[in-house]
Length: 257
Image (cartoon, rainbow, N blue to C red; front, side, top):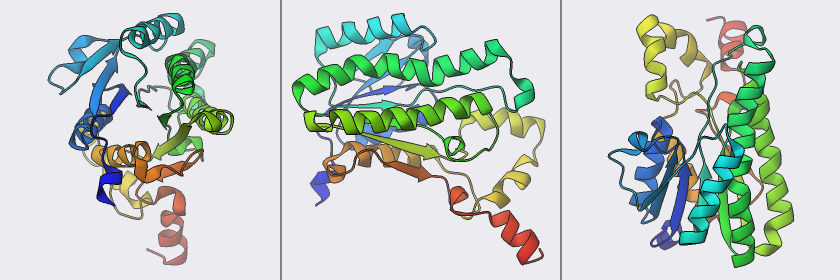
């Protein structure tokens, strides 16, 4: 049974590999035996990672992204699995949005993911096998702020389902992971500005903590492995219980804390 969770000799392309979650993804897939191709916008972001190769592109530029992926496939073939992990947001509420901000966040989080994965999907379908995992967000399931980002991440769920349904007969599986707040270095600036910020965040999480990057990576490794061979078109929350229910409501209204 244990070998079904291994990825020995498999190639896995991870976008946003140089980020907080991405680096844990690289470590997790390497520990499972995979050869990892790191993708990011700058080679410096990939420094120090244990990679079998790298691909550089800017997700906000779909033509360049597609061309970089097509070059990689022409030289090396399609990877066995892909984790579409890269993402970006700054507009935290509707008041932070305008046409340019909306277009930018949709371009990176949704359009860029499509431009990156579409050539790979075609090559995987021709081969007759492949697995894709999209890192979405709990924001795609309920509103926790960041409206443009949320819309894009919800789009990833719909896109993954279309791949699962229309490419399943060609051996493809496509699944989605929806993390809650993940304790990456992205939180450092918030904690520097307000050391008590987690006092307001953690009461929303039934586990009493944020998710760790390696926990998101573990879920991705599982979904790419043969242990998940019958799973496709699903959305897996890795959110410390956030979307299970409203803990703060229970505590403050029902328990009177």
